Length: 435
Image 1 (spheres, rainbow, N blue to C red):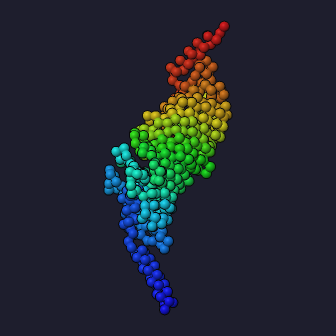
Image 2: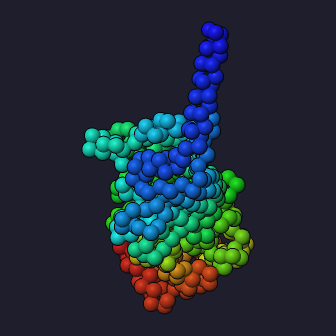
């Protein structure tokens, strides 16, 4: 009898456990999970379908995180599949602690009326928030599509193949959202960056990018930091350093804007060498037409072991001073510049190589317009002067204007009035030097 009772009790226990698991596994927790995630993120979350494994871990399908006022009607995020390695029982008890892996995700960041749809994300957990869930999540977004939209200016930028690693934590008084970004390749204004990585931290006014690193070509590197402004007139600011960038790559048109002697027809000029630079730039807008109107900055660009073919502008310039039209090799070129109001102004240019030092002054327009001057006197002293040999003996300077565009530059020889003024200056100098 006793054995029979024990057997019946065991059967009842097994049946109860089985019934409990059946009830647990068949209960629809989708709405409850969506509710907990909504209160934790401060955004409406909808879940198309959910699956629970025997350990209580969760797979979510067709997940959408919607925006709130004043961004109603748009989505912050849509994902086909989210693997949520969080205990279901803990989640229902408002403890969202674990690891999240997101596949096939679209992330849409919008700026409108000086605010973004990131504001208010991840509400602070504290006495005033009562039932807000505790969040500590290690989030990984794989192969994401990121869309950044500036509705105030009617511009947008899309990046694909983005990997995002983020730590979301609202357990302190100040919520944290530390993000690591990885992008295989991105093209910005004609320059291709590979293997882009950075860490980001969002605040109310800006997204700060730190430890920015990217590859340019085979050996070139880019490092720096920057900010994407969420408020105010400026859209972004970056301070970057470049090293070992190949001039034969897609940076050459940009470098020609800073050092026009690289130009002839830019596409035809097979200049070679490497580049290093330290730059600080900021602007409004995401697309070049608007960026061009607002870009300001400064910096120094250093060119190393530059070989210029016979059709380059510097060779044509040196030919006026009596040099042959052979190719030129420059060991070092340093260009200090400022940029504002649609122009790049050359503050100082120094050249070292083949005894060629061409003092350049003036500016280059963002549209390629050239408004420059070069003094031939240093070249005349080296190469004999050519057609200006006799004049150079008595002049103080021989200013040559560089006009046209980067694609079609042209040299304007010294005007007669300029030569006359230079000869007069030379005569005065000699008179003062005589005892």
